[in-house]
Amino acid sequence: MLIIGGPASNNLENEIADIIGMRSLKVDYKIFPDGESYIRFPEKLEEDIVLIQSLFPPQDKHLIELFLMIDTAYNLGAERVIVVVPYMAYSRQDKRFLEGEAISIESILKIIEKLGTKYFLTVDIHKENSLKILSIPYTNIVPTVLFAEKIQELNLDNIVILSPDAGGIGRVRDVAEKIGCEYDFLEKRRDRISGEVRLRPKNIDVANKNIVIIDDIISTGGTISLAAKQVIKNGARSVYVLCTHALLINNAVKKILSSGVKEIIATNTIPNIYSKISVAPLIASVLNNLFK
Ligand code: R5P
Image 1 (cartoon, rainbow, N blue to C red):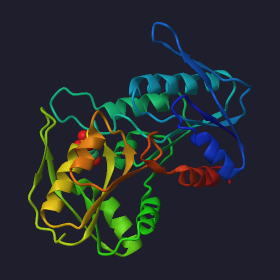
Image 2 (image 1 turned 90 degrees about the vertical axis):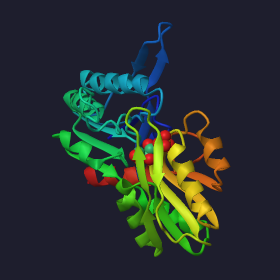
Image 3 (image 1 turned 120 degrees about the horizontal axis):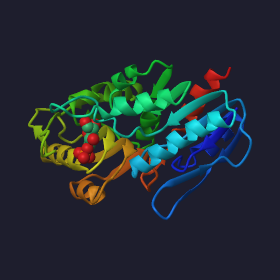
Image 4 (image 1 turned 60 degrees about the vertical axis):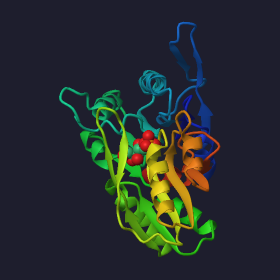
């Protein structure tokens, strides 16, 4: 088995290959003057290959690169292509919120499957249910064990773990049970037209507690900064933020830190200075089981 990193792999292929004890390489890539993507596999392919390509911005470019890689791998003789997408773009457009909208995540997953993918692996997709559109086997890795380890390293007492919305309650429950602390969720509403986020006031005892807010994605930072402000207003001693996918668009970091958050910690599904937790061991473990 050969593990191949695409242009947006964040070098996870090297980390994973080291853990499993296998070979890795990176595709050659460039952009033509007109903006089109170019992909070349620099050597002969083996029967089984793992392609790693995250889908952080520019998502559409990274998607096209992924499509070119899957299709070309089969053209060049691969028999089984396993696709690993650490950050799955478009996962929040998982239903028709307004009449006539594309269910984008379904369209993209259908293309990935149609190109011949034999197994699909992703990390903390916004809604695991979206993967049910696939008829190939898949795994969604939720890095709660890594979050629990990181929180323990922070050496805090009186911890309450919070999800900024009801949808994330499973994630925070899992982490809280691993470290033995309290957990709860806030009540978030998003306006489907303007995108504006509001939090309903909720009575949670956060006074003098160290709060860790965990979310799957931080995009503009609006959700996290509202949540931080609410708990600080209610007397929280400190607020830390953990997330799987730190998109951190525009001035998200400034917005979050100025709302009183002490530290932002994310996994390395998206490269940036906050990506302090590697998901490589969890991906390696799934791949190991696949090829046992
Ligand atoms: C949405 O439900 C997600 O779980 C995140 O809460 C959301 O994507 C965060 O977006 P933003 O940072 O723009 O508020």
